[in-house]
Each structure stands twice: as structure tokens, then as C-alpha cells.
Amino acid sequence: MSKRRFEGMAAVITGVNDRGIGAAIADQLAQEGAQLALLWHEEPKRFLKRLEKRNIDVLSIECDVTRQSQVNAASEKVRDRFGETDVLINNAGIDHSGEFTSTSDEDWLSLIDVNLTGAMRVIRSFLPSLTADRGVIVNIASVLGIAGCAGFPAYSASKAGLIGLTQSIAAEMAPQGIRAVCVAPALVKTPMLKKYLSTFDEDVLAELERSHPLGVGSPQDVAAAVAFLASPEARWITGVTLPLGWNAAFPL
Ligand code: NDP
Image (cartoon, rainbow, N blue to C red; front, side):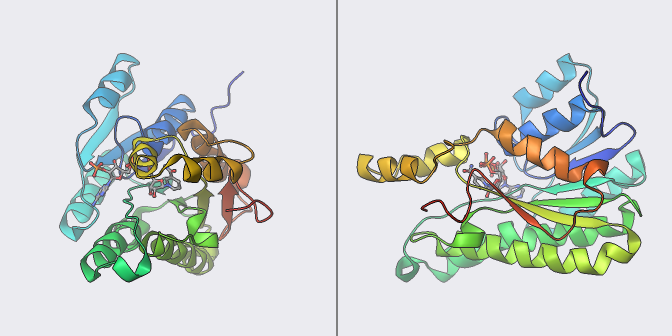
């Protein structure tokens, strides 16, 4: 029998599109009984239709995480519909590849604004309505935030910052029974990855394969780990970053 670990709980996910990691997490949590608020940059029409066909009722909200007014409006809508939020997933993110010496201020600031400051804005706005003794924040970091990577200085810095933010929030909120954790996936097959791989030649692709002995992950692999960390089964786990598809002994 499949588990229903999120029965009676409300979950909020940012940066949901039709095929990415956010949609896979939404799918998994809905299957396990969660009520969903899906925040998006561009409406994920096909995914919303798929959920509708399965009679899954979701609160669908436009929310650019770089705009505090939109984030606050979204948190008010969620509060009006669900009251408290049990699970808050910061998934919205962008990438930008390029050597450090060719990274412009504009590239740097726009990436940090979405991946790090965006998550901070969302947490700041939703924190007052997270359920005491049960609420959990799951931030989607990256293995590049742990190990760094040539060609990705801004992206790696944004995800390393997210890991530090998570640790501090975990420490501040533990007395109220609110947890904060990260997952740090290696490469996952999503539209973001497709765009990134298209910039490399075959040698680099072979090298990437070598550095992923467990293979490239799927959005569902990430969703399974997120669901465990967000569930009451993980009630004694906070402040940690769980690497997915990678460990320190693998080449990067
Ligand atoms: P996608 O590009 O499919 O998803 C990222 C989502 O974030 C998109 O829906 C995008 O919307 C949204 N987004 C971008 N900017 C904003 C914004 N300002 N406000 C709100 N939403 C925004 O990529 P993935 O599913 O692969 O990535 C999901 C998360 O996982 C990201 O944080 C990424 O860094 C992380 N990750 C991904 C890995 C991978 O290999 N795929 C590996 C490790 C981590 P839109 O496209 O409309 O702009």
C-alpha cells in the first residue's frame, strides 16, 4: 500500500513548470494526500490540466520570487485557503554558466536574486504561517553548492548560500519545532539540464557521465528524497543537506 504521509497537510512549491523537479515534487506530495499551492513564473498549463484530470484541486498562483509584493500576495492567498502551511519547498531557480572572469555583475546579481534572495523572500513571507511542531522548509540546492564547479561560480555561490541560510534558519526555528533542510542533487534530467548539456561537446559529456556512477537522476528521484525529508518520518532531521546522485568520493 502506498504511503499517505501528507494527509491533512498543505504544501507550497515555488517555480513549478510542466516537466521540472517542482512538478515531480507536486505529483508525489499530491499522491500522498497533500493539498497543494503551486507558485509559478509561467503558468504550467499542461501540468495543471493533468492534475485536474486526476481530480486534484490545487491553488495555482503566479509568483515571481524576485518580487516581494508577489511573494507576499501569494502567502496571503495560501493563508486564506489553507490557514497554516506544513511544507514549503523552494524550487525556483535559474542557472548561468560561464567562467568567473567572464561573469558580469548583471549575471551575478540576477542569479543570486532568484536562487538565494528569492528563497529568502519566500521563507520570510511564509514563516509566520508555518505550522509549529510540524512545519518544514525544503530548499533545492545543488551539489555545486557543496563542491563548486569550474564554469559555474555564480550558480555554485547561490546554492552554497542557500545551504548556509538553511542551517541558520534550522537553528533559529528548532525551538518552535519547525525544520529546514536542503537537497543537493547532481544532474537531473529536466529542461534546465537539456539547455545546459547543449552547450558542451562530446568529451565533456563523457566526463559528466563518468562523474555520475549512479547515472543522471530523474525529477522523481529528487521528489522521493524531498518527500522523505518533508514527512513526519524525518521529524528529528534538520539543518542538513542531503546530496543526491553524488557523494564526496565521486569525481566531479
Ligand atoms: P527548470 O528550469 O525546469 O525549473 C526551474 C523553475 O524555476 C522554472 O519553472 C522557472 O520558471 C522557475 N523560475 C525561474 N525564475 C523564477 C522567478 N524569478 N520566480 C519564480 N520562478 C522562477 O529546472 P529544474 O526543474 O531542473 O530545477 C529546479 C530546481 O532544481 C532549481 O532550483 C535548480 O537549480 C535545481 N537543480 C537542478 C538540477 C538539474 O540538473 N536539473 C541539479 C541540481 C539542482 P521559468 O522557466 O518560467 O522562468
